[in-house]
Length: 110
Length: 113
Image (cartoon, rainbow over all chains, first blue to last red):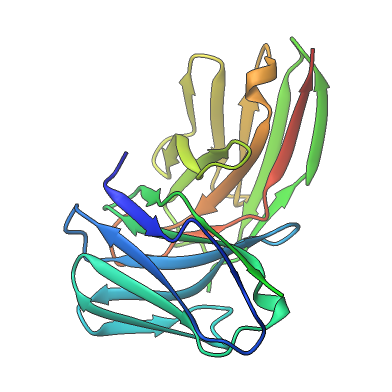
């Protein structure tokens, strides 16, 4: 494994509540990514980071924010969870070529 | 930006048959094409990749081919086994840490014993 962990692994939350997912890496990689995976849509980029305090939006960023105060941690926040955000969320780090994924977080919004 | 199309979305084969998954990309500057395998409930993991200066690469029962002119690349699995059953994703990117990989929508491969 590439030294990337996500927490929590599973979460059920209610509509309208804020939720924060954490991604932690031990590889000192500069680039980190948050994807969501939904049937028929593959892996879609939510936000990414290219360094501490440097982040940018991906293709499905609405309703999400991120923060990166340390190289090793990249947080994804759902500001007010909606049922459409029920998904599996993957964090990834990237070397020069290969992307390494965390184990994923299954989030259910009820 | 880059756009990656992947087909088919589902592929069902008998054990021992070959399986082929095809992807096309739009950005002629892309030069790195990885394939990831995701078993049920697990994370995607790299199984093979190819760079644009190579036309074909093999690793045991899997191979990848690249046609830069047509902007398409394919994954070939020979002598399929039930443990090959998984979702396979292609991706296109450039070498260099700053380039974000763009993924296809995935192919669910089912190998029937």
